[in-house]
Image (cartoon, rainbow, N blue to C red):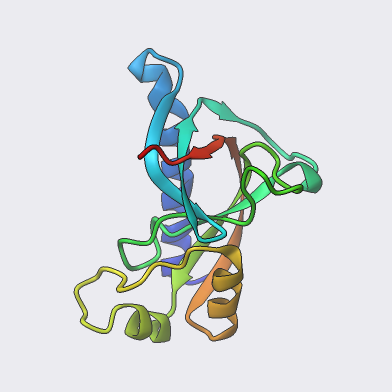
Length: 153
């Protein structure tokens, strides 16, 4: 595993831990975060809860693609399911870390400012860009819960 991937995994583990613990420190148990997660081309709010768990059955979680340590900013997380879809598991996530390759950085940030010029908004786009060699996807052993809610206008 190269250093970039290792730092991405460490970073995402830290982020999930911060997300899980933040509501407890805030004292209110849960916090609504607007416009945070893409799923099927729709942006969703979420409620960050202090719920993490270990080794759930594969069928009981959805995939959340995290770009927090991808090499570029501006790309929000992407879910492979959402409310209203038969396979949605209520916001129980299995996290995958996404890292832009050098080719991906050239394509997604042609002006070189460190910010993506366009966001990927669905799991199909994620997998298509993986096939193109723009991103690499790494499994983690990170599982947590935060349900998706329709974005408030």
